[in-house]
Length: 271
Image (cartoon, rainbow, N blue to C red; front, top):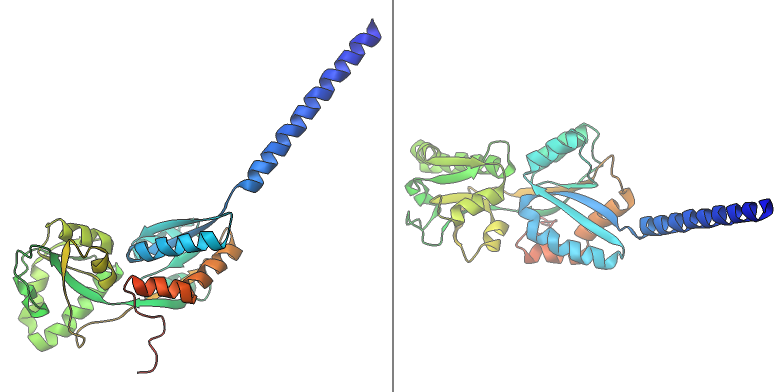
């Protein structure tokens, strides 16, 4: 009788042990099946281009997943400074990237694309703007905040134009600023919805909303070029995959996608 009970007890323990092993095998299998993630912090103006590159990247790296965090460069830079988990940072200007590099938070960056500001109006164009010089007629102007790259570029454009068009031009335009937004897509949305007579965005943003806005080019003598640097972060959770992402963005297929979205080439060539 005693031997029978012992045998039964041993059998139960064996079943429990087997169940635990099976559970561990399933857990390990689930863990190994979990996709590798590359977390990309990118300027809002890169949305469509990086979404397209992400699809190509995931196809080229089976089992991987691209997580895009899109916002103003200044916001993303601050998040990285405060310890946010990110593998890659792609900025719409050199300044925010340099601050992170000086702090030892990113590796050496490379410029992968360029862009240029334009003025947009709602499709109906209520202010009747036909050229950049008409900008003082926009009674509600939407621009980026001073710390946002597009905001800084806007200030540079107005300063340069004011030297030729007179102080009254820049003063009137500045007085008509209705709001200062934290990223370029907020500017695009407000102008698209008719909440502003005009706004400053990148050419690529205007292209993404071509059915909702009109574009007014800024004469080249007053315009500026926005340079977009990219870098792997110093504390990247998956540095190997991060490097692969940077390589994809800089590769001919990545550059072709960026060019198709309206970005200028990474290397402008000799002047």
